[in-house]
Image (cartoon, rainbow, N blue to C red; front, side, top):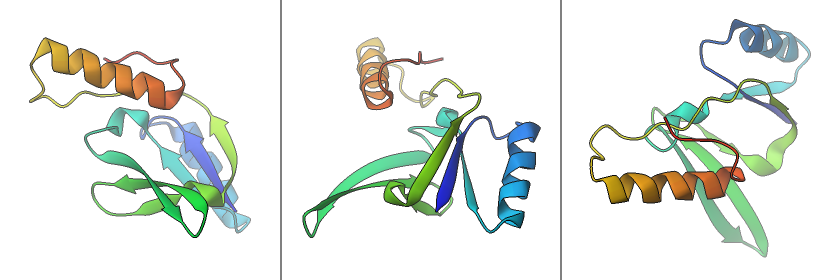
Length: 109
């Protein structure tokens, strides 16, 4: 079972909890929403009658969300926008899609 911690990469409280979980043979995963969509991607697959949601990091690493047994929504960061996305209409559409994915609660920075 994995524990998903949604916070900032610089959150030392989250890092301390991750170390404590790892010492207890629990797989901690830190998710920084500010990395989405530039360095973090969410994909869905339909395999053998089962929906799979996969988080993929730009530098490598994947997390099948079906392996997550608990989530700690600690200090979620606002989603980031790619710097090269300059058209206002495209920025608004991207922000809308991200809010839809996350349940509508966060604003783009």
